[in-house]
Image (cartoon, rainbow, N blue to C red; front, side, top):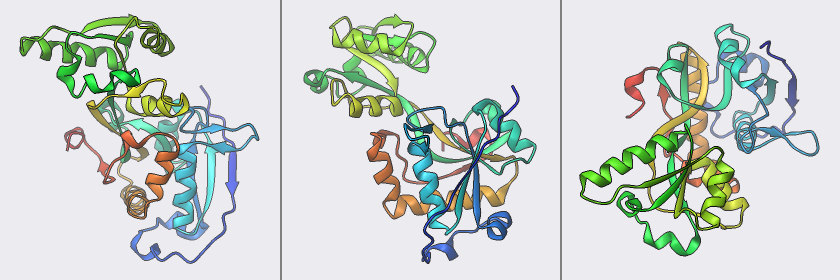
Length: 279
């Protein structure tokens, strides 16, 4: 697919930045006064176009705060997700701002700067939350999963752990779509459902607590923005930006707004090889 480029430039109110000296800006940001990122703007609640035709979402808000932090303008190049890594390799952009899962195959092409984590969590009816305090609390329960999803495989792994502990296995109930797993729990056909931390937290918030997240996060993987392989300058700039947003509380405010606190990290990391993923 050929990438469609749409430049969206935001002029921000520029204020003296007390932290600027601590953030190593790339030469391109210094010379242009602009932070340019790639975004698909098609993956709510992370990045999308709102009812007024404006870019919105968790990633967009963090990007705006990042640009404000370094007293720059934010320029969003609208590039489909599948074309973002090729665009980095070709040098068309320096930063692809999406919630990329850090994976081995991708690390062959790009480096990552982490700012979230993704794992599998259980969602239950509010009055059932107390009955599941850890993974063993899921043993013997009917757990709804979307077929082929990461949660599907997590359920198998946790079920094996149950049996190793001489506990009843998890009764996995498979559905074709996540919406079906939600209905299964709401209607009592399942005791819990598995979903990604980001999606689960967002659903708990937007549904006003129809289902809530039980304690425990399983199979955690880092999420991050991507930079060209070996582009240490862009990677270190983004790491420093994320770390300052974490330190000054802006990061928490934005994540809380979208119900993403479960996906929060304490430190941003640069990942260039597979052996760093689990650090």
